[in-house]
Image (cartoon, rainbow, N blue to C red; front, side, top):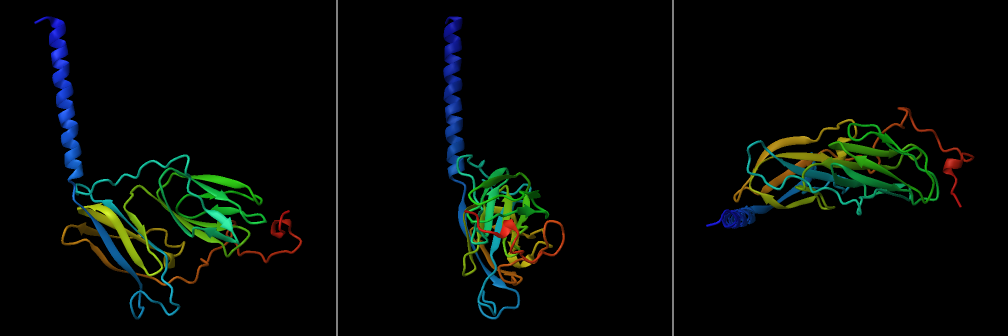
Length: 258
C-alpha cells in the first residue's frame, strides 16, 4: 500500500471515530435528566398563603448555581445578543420592568420616554454608574459586567426605583403576582439556591443562600419566606448621599420638554 493511501485510510478512520465520539456525546447530553422546579413565596409572619395585610407579595428572584463536583449541567448563561439588548424604560416617572435579570456582560439600554430629564444612577454593591442628566427621547447604555444586585434610581425623582440582577446561570425565576416560582429544565444535582426579594432593600446587597439537592424525589423549593416590601418605593438617598430636594418649579429639569 502506498504512503498516500495509508494517510487517507488513517484520516478516514480518525474522521469516523470523531463522528462516533460526537454522536455518543450528543446522546449522553440528551439523556441528562432534568425537571421543573417550583416554589411559592410567602411573607414572613403573614396569615394565609402568600398574603400580606396589603395583599401584595414582594417581587422575588431565585436562581441556582451548581455546587463543586455536583451533577448540575447547563449552568453557563449564553452570551447576550448584541441585537437584542435588554431595556429599562423610563416612563411615567417609573422604570419598566421594575425587576430585570440579565447575563453577566449584558449591555442594558436606558431610554427616556418621559417628556422631561432623568438622571439614572446606581451606587450600591452591584454595577456602579451615573448616567447624568439626559433629555426626553434620548437613551444611555450600561454594560453590566459584574455579578450582583444593582439598585437603580433617578437623582431627580425619588419615587423611581428598579433592580437589575446580573448572573452567570440561566436557571432562575421571577415570582409572579401570586408568589409562584417555576424553573424549567433543571438537571438533577446539588445546587446553591440564591434568593433576593424586594423587602430586603439596598442595604442588604447579598442574596440569601442555602444548599439544595434536585432529584426525581426532590424537585420542590417549598415555601420561601421573605420580608414584606414597603410599597414600590425603596428608601434611598440621592447620588450625593443626601435627602432629595423638593421640586423647584422654575428648574428646567422638571419642566416638560417640547
